Image (cartoon, rainbow, N blue to C red; front, top):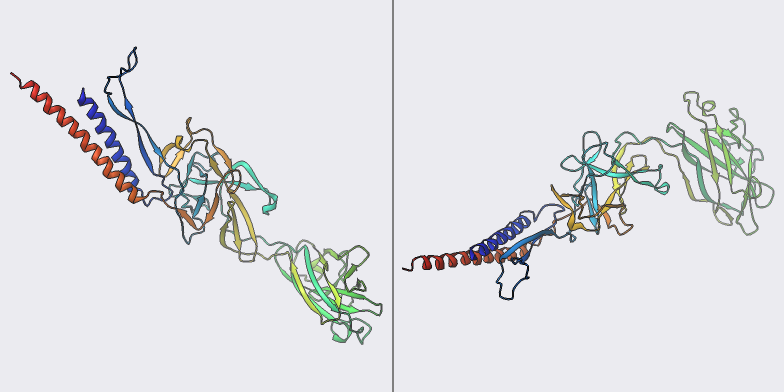
Length: 432
């Protein structure tokens, strides 16, 4: 009967109204994906098929399909806010010990809980791949999930192992007037430079290099001190007032570095140095470092230090969090160091529209969606990640208001169908 046909239209139009209303209600929901109601006509089936004269039995809702188009990226001031530009979902777990993600979201409004874990507003844990070491180059254990944890304790110190320097020595200078080197007598050396180095506990020490031109053409001697005490290759520490052995540094006739110490070397190794012989108030691991002079020159121009750096660090406090475009989260420390905490794990599906809707702007795996493919941002068809940003809802309010009018008209038209059928029925019943 037409009553059933009109009723089916009312139900379909009502679903369309609810779907559109839900889109409008979530126009400002972070990471929300709009939906649309999809319909199919209905015909009564029979053994003979559908006759050409059969008018149909109405309409039914086949699916309320979500549209996973990209939302606008809006920037914030919170480095833990994350947005995905492109394909993929953030992975979440309800339990800190969960071996795999249990839900997926595009809402990247994350925060720290009281224990230092990165969580969403429901307390679900953001999953990540653990670092294989202390540098990005060592990689991450993709496929092994763990909740992303930010350690707010002090950054550990790092003992100096390498000093790199590029200097220019003035080749036009004469040997010092005083033949016997004495670090307290400027007339016994040509130039000096210093750099701060750190031991295993982060204590700072001053390493000084004194450069003395010799009577041999294109050859200089290097005398090295730590906190005023002479040190020698192999780790020897001289007594107070005793001059450490010199290390020769030679240049070619073109002024290019030839070797340091012996042929084929550009650096000199010091250590292991027992620092308690220099400072009896500390007890730390022996200090071992090399000084590399690669790139140094001897030209007829004033002495200059063109590069001087070392790789040690003192202890430091956490000052901030950085997230790269490939989802690597770094902790920055006040000592200038940084440490990778993990790489944010992402997932994508063969059929996004088949995902189970879990609410709270999250989805779950289903038989229709297919199994998740895990990876990292910027690789294997995954989108890139933006820190201090959020993906806004992909709802276009103007479009939804127009759809609201169309759904309302459909509802009214189907109501009119029922009203008309009722009038006809009443007319028939009133015939005498």
